[in-house]
Length: 60
Image (cartoon, rainbow, N blue to C red; front, side, top):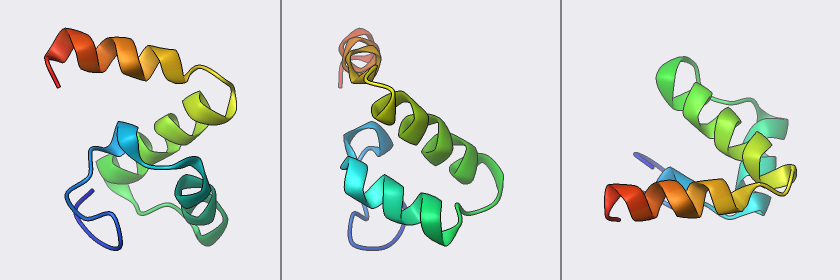
């Protein structure tokens, strides 16, 4: 995350409540907004294990 309270945090590691807050406030434009929106949808639909598996494959 390039700004705010979670600056320096991997987007997949952002808590759901923060993603919900951003969603209600309005996601930023561009690629960052797309990544945040995708992460939000994955987490609220109970598919966070996908993010965990992806992080493992990438070695993070």
